[in-house]
Image (cartoon, rainbow, N blue to C red; front, top):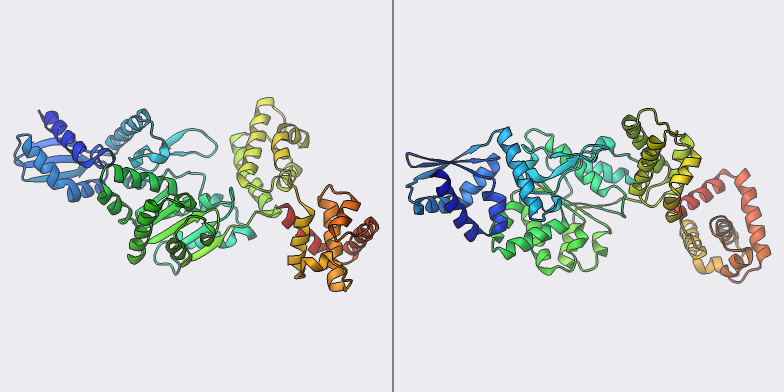
Length: 477
């Protein structure tokens, strides 16, 4: 009899609320029955129980009464941990059968995190993270596994400040940079750190694509009210890869109003993108302006020292997963030098080496690295052009490119020109006559003289040596 009543109530709610809101808020509930005019329901968290009571309580009460049972009020209790785990498993199975992925999980308990070095999944802290239907957090991405170097020290410090909780002087925090430079790592680390605090703030982390998906679903099922209430009731909103809402007018409109509502409540916002806010094509000017009003931090391309530090940290983790497998120091140095564009590729290369070594029972040496990573090394070869070298040298020495290519022989111009010729010989496959032609049609003997001169100065002048090395690293990064 009890299940018949609840079945009719669920049917009515599904029709009136729409699939998205029903799956998010009603599906997790368990109907315990009615006694003395009180309907007893169980929710996986107090947040869901309070939300349903506030927004759908009268509707549920009316549907129960329509089913023939008089009810004067609803009473919500919080399910036990075992019940929450069982509900999580059931909800994950339903989402899987419906074709939903982790990124589109409507119940937070269906989100999964990976243990470091394993493909296994486990629930993401249902008691704390489970209150909000965001993206799963990766357990590998914490502050203690983030390697700090000069290119990312400001971003790390800003993220740490946000993770401390409490009011900050910059809102939003906008992190931007290329692929594999640590934006997502820092955002996950902030979320983990905030969740570890007592009392834990309500943190919602998700991708811009998920924000757009949930908004479209809310429009489809005519449940924008629940969408607005959810996103405007959090303490910290974190949106990854904001460039994906560019060109989506309705999504940008809702994002704009959500942003303003949270800032007005002094709630923290953390955003990431692949470029600076002002450079995101298709993003409305008013959103660009809001994103720029806080702290905008660029995660610069990694330098050699930072890449080596990352590899050393990851090698320690891999050595725990693969006892007895050793890696030569020069292999790490070789990888840090050769794979410079993407930290994820760098980490993947090291993971592949350890996996290969454990299968064949060999230590990781240079021969194995070159054999096992031949495709990665070919793809990571940096093609530096003479024009790029000229531009970089001109910027470094604050001279005009036209002067480097022109006839001027003043030392303030001739020395940078010689440095550019030297780097062109070292970093490109161009012949001496080709290099000379790129420098205003000069003879190849001029290039030979420049190369010899810089080689000589490097051995006796530490400033010249440091400048040339700096420029080489910048060009190879």
